[in-house]
Length: 119
Length: 113
Image (cartoon, rainbow over the protein chains, first blue to last red):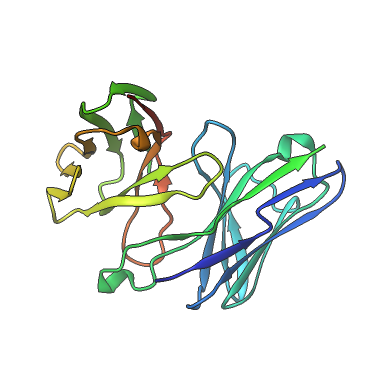
């Protein structure tokens, strides 16, 4: 089945620095990748949708200059948290949509998540 | 956009009892409804899903029911076991195109031995 590899699994950084999170589709081409953020004891909230070859679409309230999303190729999408602050500490997870929605494959593939702690 | 409400937020049961989690959705265009189990610090794991052309689906101890008219769907776990303890999320999406999933707020299920 489809696999999305996400790295790093956890990272600790200092306030003001930037952190890059990568999601790679290993056995399929992902033209779209969804990026979610999950605070402790809360649900997954969509931050943005990345599309290969075009600009990412951000959800309302998400700062596009702070959360830089790049879909560099059909197998790589990255999220860079710039000038990180403690309030950015969260669990970030990517997800590729079903590879053949019309064909009955409805399964979304999730990365393993990245625990970001900003100190 | 889609809004998914999930209840209860926490559910405690004794081992062997049944557990039921309920969700409602707002967008009548949604036609795919998965349920995920998430353990602390890990990715959501799909446990069962249902499409809008089906009213019920069962997989061993887990079942999901869907009422399109009322726009609600439920997860039923029978003969619960301690290892069923986790956070469960319902979600909704449209299967056409590349629609994102909209998640409910989650239910923390605790199964006591």
